[in-house]
Length: 586
Image (cartoon, rainbow, N blue to C red; front, side, top):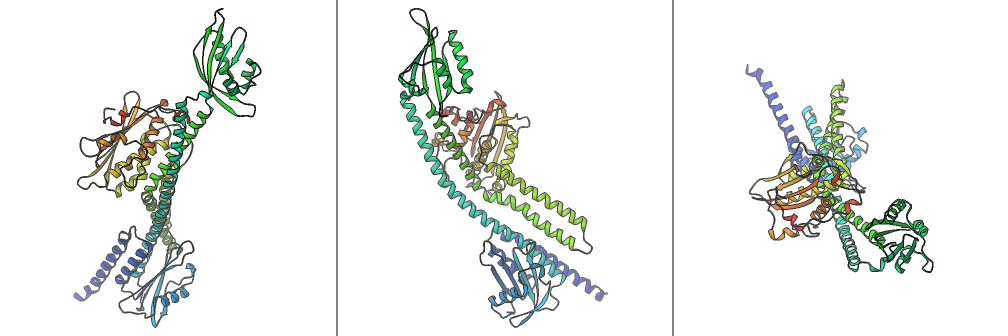
């Protein structure tokens, strides 16, 4: 009876060892997470060498961009083969060749002075990453369980190496992006300040040299221009001004407005204040501001008098300033996304790893005899699902990175917030942030620019996360709340449990270039407040009763929450006291 049980006992032990080895192989990615390719390879070779009692393990990695390939060799405790690592690499490369399709599955090969059974396995579906070769002096190598372990290890290594290569490229791109963003930010900030100074100087001087006066006798249509007004209209100063000349100089699209104002003036309806354009003979357009009113002379005759200001340069400066502000907002948004590079890479790596694994599984199922068509079909569906997940991440990223004109639309603020959370979630988890959302179910739609509002939300989330980075004595809780407000308004609130706010710095929080971060630019909150103000809203901060701080913004719901592209730049600045409003009492 004992003799009959001996073989099953050995088989059970062999299977238990195989399962333990398989678990060890599957745990390898946790050891090399975030490591460089050389560390991934070294960890893999050391593990296989001891796990399978091999005499030789060799890895060759194809390097990108024409760099020299990477070769790593490990020799077992027996010290055989006795050849040097370069000799081993040359012998294996000559034997394998460059075409993975022609690699023999197993061969007996003399390396140095040692006869080995060697088995190559491609790294990647077509060996595009490289090759791993395992060798043993045993004649029965590799057995079925050893080949299974080698196959799983090769697949895990391929995923790890792809991740390491992608992470290295992401870091390179992030570093270059940070450098360009910093340089462009300085340039745009300087241009922004110059434009502001020019506009302020023109406002201080009241642009007296660009304002002319006129009078118009309504009974005779006699018109008198001042010298400056002749210059603005570019009429001959020695010739009388005729009503037909003025009408002919006005932009065709503004003639109905001029006709309406002239009709009101003839009916003695006074106090007109309106903007109108001129189109000059060479095609140039001038923007004018007109203020006029009616009077009667001693004989009771009606006369219309007023002043006309040439506001063309002022209009161009405003447009230039709006363009620079838009550029600065875009640079700030891209800078925030640059800091999320590792998070975004993780979000893309997960479905990509699934794609590689499912594709490998599908190939094995199709290569079986008979082929497992149903299983291959299911793994193909999973591959498509993971590809769609990666595509969704890229779509959200492209939307936030896009540089385009202001787009005004009705949007669901809750949906926009969820998209930002999806991009930021991995970074928040890496920073051990516990995120909770309380998004109102009955939240009305708002009207505005989706990307700009998402930029504000992204900035508030990152600031809250950064404020808790040094907190270790309590949970790092973050809460995002949306709710209705009185007066058809919608409020978003971001609460954190971080270091809180310095009362002495409250008035400077939203100033450009003011920051409490060592690596911050000090533009995030300044740009965010500008965006919210252009949406007829307000953004403020307040300390919590306990640890941390609360940042909130409130914007109108419905069509009145924003205007067109030009209108978004014409919103006044709310009182400074808004920055000190406390949560629940704006």
